[in-house]
Length: 207
Image (tube, one colour):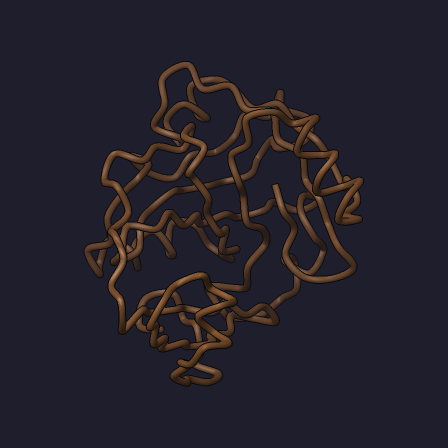
């Protein structure tokens, strides 16, 4: 809320056998905070008991454990300056502008960083004609909403059989990203990404 301009919608504590069975964790007590940015919401879940393991410090964007949420910003330099002013931890060396030769992603600006627990997050700015049209709505807000969550998969075709054919999400676009800008964004030398965007009826997309 203090850095990214989310608003608290609700907070509650949860415990009991039903939650233990749902989570598969014995003797748990959860503190759950629901936050809103624009029209999208996330839930932050703290295990008051039992405590879990921290995120490994050496997780990288090419690891299968990698997942992030992408927050849309109106002005990348201003948003990056906000993060720097609050001492936010870098995951990329700085914002990257994807090259114009990329037909699906050219002109998009992006930056990876970490939250206090080490979760990866992304700032993303879409130029005119890119992304969902709602991100071009005039206004003063710096942080606009959640565009997507991205999950690294081992096999795109196997994952499409699950997410598209099994769960009913639709493919909204594809892209193959590579080059020095993508390498710096991911902080992975030689990175080459096959990206498939999936959507449900509403809400953030899945990549």
